[in-house]
Image (tube, rainbow, N blue to C red):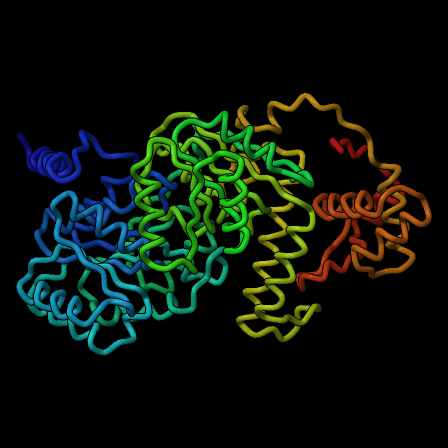
Length: 504
């Protein structure tokens, strides 16, 4: 038997022994092998593809320490708990760790008993943490570094975090240690940022499609009273259910409404005390058909395969984020549903929240870095709105947002829709003509003017103006105010209209 086969046998034996798997999942083995060879890696693998194994297995094969940077304390704690249940020594270091636990962690590192150490990114600014890692390096125990949710380092990513910017120091601090960056979604621009900012050297770049062929996407308008529709979706779902709401208050409200309707729903958000959060997590992981209402951070790294429904009660903030969140469904490979119930006002509320976080120059001139990120967030939000209201296959549109090109999925509500379309070109001429008269207008005032002039509801005209933005006939400002003006294509349309066939 040659050396390659022996190495493969050793990896498969380790995989079976530590994780009980008989084979690697798509994309895992090349990353594991590259790390064992001392090579940097960028792994973009979809939710449920087993990204964590890519850095966990090398630590076990080498019998050394892998340091993992992760953005959420709850995610780190859950990963450590899962590893300890498998008999793998692991720990996490974060700001809230009691002093006695920190001392025990240091002792375990000195005795080289740990295989995985999870760190919050801000801990790398602490001199004591750096000293711990340098001591592990000098003793020969540090075998790999991993940056989980690596898209957080990029201002072009959907979840930028300033503390991640400092992770470039890892390369200068530990130049000889292989580093792997991992993410579920990273378009080409974000991948380039990750490689550059982390200083990855000639990395293996392993990218797998974000398409999940067992997931069916549906997006529709949220009714004034959505509870009956939510209950209907719950009744049709298999296994566990994740319901996402945007705010902590909404999470509490919806969990209470569902309980009053006879559903044993439980709430999870960062404002709960630690025992309550732990109880909610254990409930979700152990009950046969749990229903958990949470903010969108919940679910990162949580190992539950039979989630049959992921339901968003608001418009998601970005296509990339939604692919990650919806990807928590059907990790067991069985069919699952991803449903979004949205209201057009969701976009407006989210847009104002983004603007409040970092006010921007509406003309885009002289923006500081923070404002540029907010402009990017507004554009991501607009892309998500276009997917929710547009005519295109849901999966095809979502994948294009992360740089993938593909055909219609044949499973989503758009592909299966039987609703008739109508030609909106006459109404579009009215919208574009009114905008030409005024040159620039807010979406609200334009809709009110059109309703006064032609009749109908102002909300209907606002919907039509949004659709014309999505068709690139109207431009919209990136400041959250939704100022509109005609594009050149809109002027061409006024001169020679063409059919615009949409479902209302």
